[in-house]
Image (tube, rainbow over all chains, first blue to last red; front, side, top):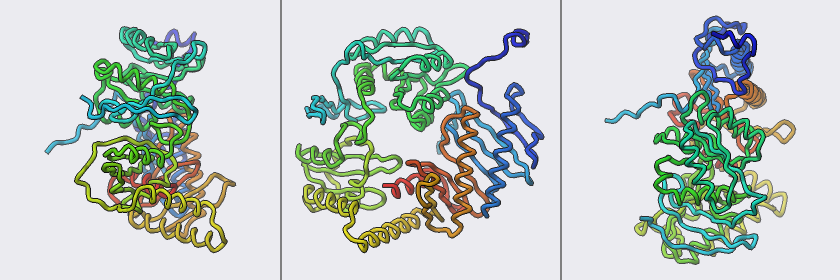
Length: 105
Length: 396
């Protein structure tokens, strides 16, 4: 597995979206992650750093937040503050995801 | 059978003769107008790209679309990667995209093309009969959403819709009849002595005008009725409209003739646009602030801050004294979110927000301005929709 990639490399022009949960400490280091190991760790660190920056600056603006959500066209990011760090939920919004069926009385 | 069968001929602003059909009922175009245009010369033929993982379907679609009156060039791709490569190399006018595909699905492709090629017309053609997907696709800015089976049953109307999309130019005005203002549309309905309900949509704002036997009898917009609502609707600069069946039993709240109302409203708009004296300017600004505060209170929001781009004016805040730190946070939060979206290739930023025990905040972008809207923690659901309405009514 991956033998050919060693020689030819991976050149996907469109990267997959991350799916899973990432926990970062107050310094932005990844403590735990359920995101696929094929997803670039540098991008996960970027997500962690950006989320911590949002929490930090909200505190500085006298509006401390316990939860932040960023909704993109095809990805939903929700982050909860954890004693200076954060737990970040990454949920791709794709057509293949099961959609909730409204309950009937 | 269609409820509307009448066909009308109108002269367009550029002298072209447009035939406008009040179309048959379909899931998407329902009773919107469809405009047919003439055929383009062969050297200016538009290119249509069809993306679907089913090769048989691609072949079928190619044959069907090749028969379009404007004779477009049809390109096909069976993977998202191939479609993106074609879009990069060819000036495609219209993308017809399936939703359910392996590796990269249609919504991902649509979010990418919306960002990279904002001028590209997009149509979703899917077998997924799910309102969730339909609303997600429309949220991504697609022009049409069709179910495959509906397309096969009603292929003539589908072709007409595509032809209309291929011919449509980027102009302001109400979609359906180009170069016509809402005043023109109302006058046309009244002059033809028709009975209908005009449903007008401007972003999240929805208004209705009831016309009975050529007379305007009622209007409803932004929580108000009657003449006030009618004046509010006429101040909208753009939007879409559709004809709904008439409601003969509707209570009459507007007694003035429509022409008198149109004249008065046009005069008011002119006066507001060019106040004569400094006192009039101050008075207009004061009235505007009071009106905005009333909107804020009625919606139940705590505060709203409208933030223009840096150097493009001062932020406008209502309901909070802590303006500068919140403006800085909002600008920085939006910059971080946009940058993150670009790096992750996650599509356009639809909304950003946060919450604590006391309140919830939403960051939205509209007309090159950022808005930070604060709501109490117990403000309930649909805050995004409520915030959009609040902002849209401010902006209008």
